[in-house]
Image (cartoon, rainbow, N blue to C red):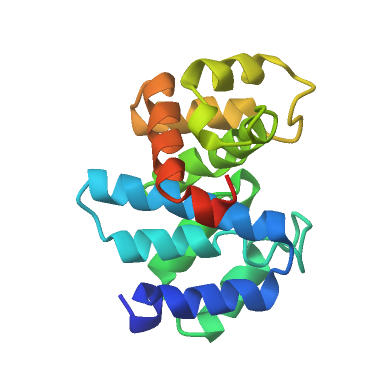
Length: 188
């Protein structure tokens, strides 16, 4: 692992250089929160895993098409000295990149990406707009409503938990709790 890959401040600078949208920044922080929590659970390098999550969509605002994202981001990170392991983990979060998810980090990133976004959306419709009010059953109920957060793939959420070998309700609860730990940063 390279120093830059373990330096959250440097990774956040890169994120903010390419991402100006508040909602995309909060998404990066939400996914980071979930992935870092899983790194602790699995006794993995929390800094490395968290920074992969932090930068998984950093190129999306400038390069939003499937032809460009996350490929342009991988090229940019390569130029900045990020390892193949780091870049491959990011590439693996997009099914259309055709990068198999083989490592635990790759599986965790995929499992947390859509779910973190969905939990955020559920939080925004709570009366208090606080994640403290979000429960597993409210997330599951909203997953059945196809009109709610319609751009979030329910299939990806379900497959993510399955690929981790974790029951969906347990995965949802874990991510809610991880996001609660950083609710101020996430604006939740």
